[in-house]
Image 1 (cartoon, rainbow, N blue to C red):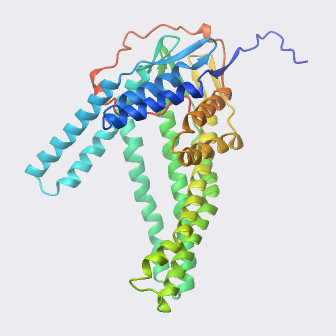
Image 2: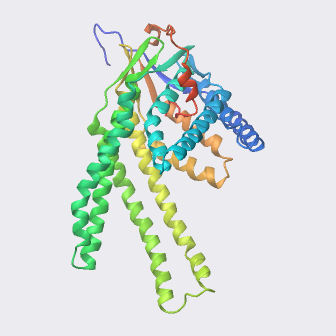
Image 3: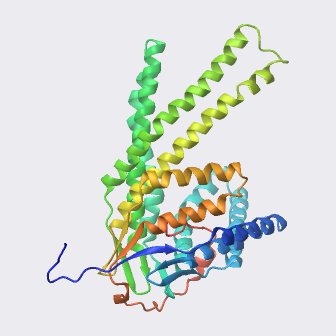
Length: 398
């Protein structure tokens, strides 16, 4: 018997998802039909309808989430961003040569601003217990995390791989070149994993420390080491599937080359030979897709658990995530492949099942009633947020 003297046990509340697959199926069906009929114009309303249903059926301690965004605002945002991009392209084409590079540069400079303002808008359009969420961050820090830091890592990666890369091509034999190439690929994958972990850890901190619920601020502590280790393990999971993919591809390629060497490759047979090995290439792509899903599953489980377990709201509300790799992996594999095999018909059932699993493994520790649940006076989204509402973030429960 566990007895704690002098301490009141901390209240604990699990997320509960009340959504039904049949209702969500009809929402998705109407969304697809109207999007096709309107040639895609209805897509913003479709996204809002789906997000609203998922939010309104998520509950914690008797209080539910809600989404208040409008499809028309998102559509206007898409149109305005398209017009700005066209005008910018025309202006650079008139006054400058090589306008494609300048357009790309201008877009990259503006990208962090657009993403942050869009994220702020959608956070403000989401509420819990009728209290709106909020999001604010330093735009210079956002630019550094989204562009500056990745660019620095790319430059360092090129410098790191340049020396062993030059030695590979200066090797004396074909075997040395093959071994060196494999080593270079493995080194590149490790560098990519480390870089992704570093960037993602800063990204999680930016989001966690910039979020708020009414007048209550969120805070978070993220370990860069934990993020890097998560990406390294994900790369270990992915590596065998990459080897299988190249094995399938090389096998098909070598068989075609062998056929051509024996005179079996001509105008009449080349198409037949390509179709003959199409199944082999498709098998390689299937294994690679499975590997990508499993690697992304591990990353999502590891980083979500780490982030939620170190997230604090106010001074007393903590969170806990207990997702497992073997619990999430079959659901994401089913969501990926069964949705394709059934042409999307199974997607609503698989999505609802996924949401229930995530909700059942997400816990709020602390008395929610002790929070100062008052709306921040500046809860209305500013005009820049509405202009960039076309950047659609993922659901906060994932």
